[in-house]
Length: 152
Image (cartoon, rainbow, N blue to C red; front, top):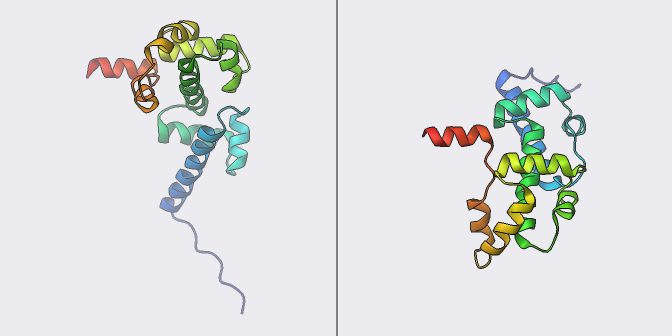
């Protein structure tokens, strides 16, 4: 006896399937932030088109795939700069950025100070503070989020 054809998927099934795929993309970015990642490759990995992934990711997480990736890279860069044993260029490449200029611009945008200033000022202040506390207190905030927090 032949197998029954699969039941047609409901809109809820499609949404749940997309959310699971988006979570896999976010997990991959969190894990492989230092690797060269682009939307097309991430989309291929979860069998979605790049456009669909971009739209759905923004709807689910409130920011673009690229913005999420850069935030993860900057968070890791902040930790490396606080350690103080690497210079800014070494940190830039260690977190997966290929352009020091783009890295410095994004870092300044998210953190509020250039990476060299952050390294100089925060490396000495962070001594004795547990890394989990330092990470929470120094978490980068996008300009949009800073405006929302100021109005609350």
